Image (cartoon, rainbow, N blue to C red; front, side, top):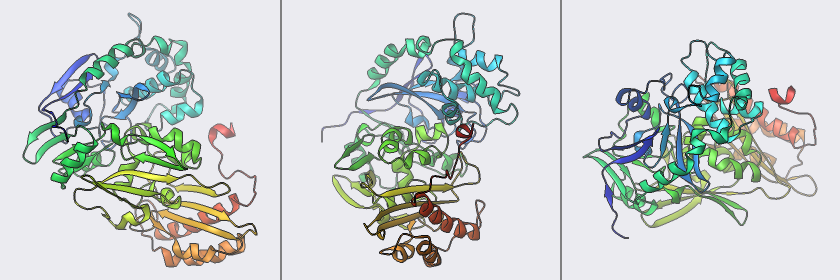
Amino acid sequence: MAEIKIRNEIRFILNGSDVALSDVAPDATLLDWLRLDRSLRGTKEGCAEGDCGACTVLVGKLSAEGLVYESVNACIRFMGSLDGTHVVTIEHLRGLPGQLHPVQQAMVDFHGSQCGFCTPGFVMSLYALWMKTPDPSDAAIEKALQGNLCRCTGYEAIMRAARATSSYGKAAKDPLAVERREITARLEALRDGARIEIGSGKTRLIMPADVDDFAAVLDREPGATIVAGSTDVGLWVTKHMRDISPAVFIGNLDGLCAISEAGGVISIGAGVTYSEAFAMLSKRIPALGPLFDRIGGEQVRNMGTIGGNIANGSPIGDTPPPLIALGARLTLRRGDTRRTIPLETFFIAYGKQDRQPGEFVEAVHVPVPAKGARFAVYKVTKRRDEDITAALGAFYLTLAKDGAVADIRIAYGGMAATPKRAFAVEKALAGRPWTEATVEAAMAEYASDFTPLTDMRASAEYRALAAKNLLLRFYVETSGTTAPFQVSRNEAA
């Protein structure tokens, strides 16, 4: 390996100014730095866990599509992840001389603010939407605002403002659009291929130069905390006050951010975010689209990674059950050594995965369902959007010509200490006619597969019944019914 250049500062653009910082703690958040170090207090702290959206800012990054701006939660975004980006806060919005920005003026005219605490976050989320989709549908507006909570105004006024924004100005003439070439050049100039190391001893922040460098760093320091999107690690700091030093930030590594398809298998690098994966996965495996739309809010989907969701091993992670049902495989890497295993074998016990010291998740490989196969995933939560799973079921089915079950894979989250297949239920269904009687008989085997717990999200009894009902729903949906099982508010209107 060629000698790696070391840099001892992070460099990025804040609004219009270049920033270089050589004194950055591994657990320093963007929100605290903006408010305490730069006195940019339009960015608010509400929940400090990525739920309410009051801290929303935009982060622009260079990608294969060019310079892309995304809404993110500053409260759980660490400073160490910002190298080579453009951070845009509410203070940077501007319209024509002497005028408010179009999003701001629309919010004023349509009475989209009362107490105003949440308003900057709403404005920034709508700003990101407006630049991407100047004339959005109601469904697109609601999706963009999933991660923003308002306690007093009421969302309809904000919806009206979002619909009207383009009547106040053109997105193509917005400063971020006009200055795109200049900002792109400035960000490209920041790319020097160096590894960043800040701090000493255990209180260190490391950003590897590339994936090979990351493998070498982690091999030397297997106890380091890997930080990709920080949608989980951020809460370790803000809610649990955990020490994450030394922290290795990998969100900038192009080698982990690729998604491709070959031979009917989609390979997803561990650094690919939900937002980046959405287009391909929702097209090739349509059932994953609605699921991804319910993972956090837009800010969380712009930060969180599929690889991170797998690597942390949570029993209520949303992606492992459907990927297990699809027969996904996982590539793990330590140094220059790789091994690929079935995803379902990665999860051993609560908090324990089949990952050796110094080893990391490099990619997940997801087979596209075979022609004629049926695949579905259902997520049960207390509220529909931006909520943590109580129970999630994923189902993959192929039928023989005589209507018998040729192959079935059923996986659940929230039903055990790990994401887990329902082997006893599968066995009761295999080779039998795909009928309601067969399905109802197989339900008795759930007691052999799962002993769910009671917690704040659901009781054990509720989870056990919901799991059975999800199988019944899958049967009905794959048996020729035309009745809709779920109608969105936009569809109903």
